[in-house]
Image (cartoon, rainbow, N blue to C red; front, side):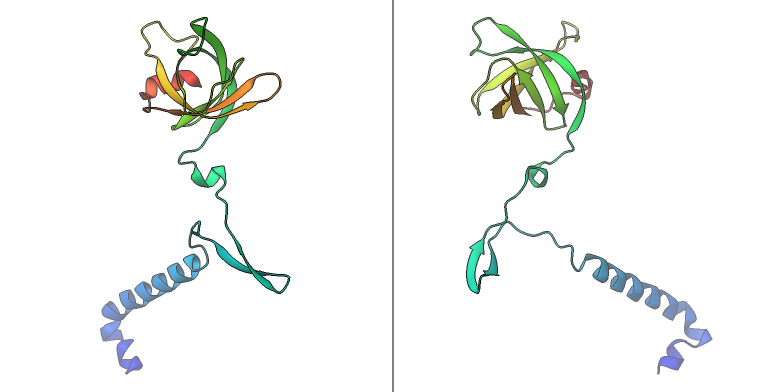
Length: 160
């Protein structure tokens, strides 16, 4: 039976079959151990006792786009919470989903503010960001901010 399958007259039919089987086997072996783990609790044995340990998602697991560092870009920040109208700040790193800002005053997570690059033309629209985290470093406050709506590419490039 197998000798008939690989005979010269059946080669146009059997060669694609062999290639398909090889590809299926390679894909199976390649992805067998790399299935994404869910955030569900994992049962582990510890000190002869069973205990539940949950997997914690790191920030890199939750992030949907790559965050890039670079030269800090000076920005203007405005918010109803500011008494002076606009405050200076810096963009420390950026991604398609948001920015990490350094400001002299902190904001509570969930609040929003508008930002614009200091060197941007006056006609450039202000970009609304929502504060997701705020950490006091001692010298300044570092805020992880998410864009309320992803700005156009030409505006996004102004942040570095």
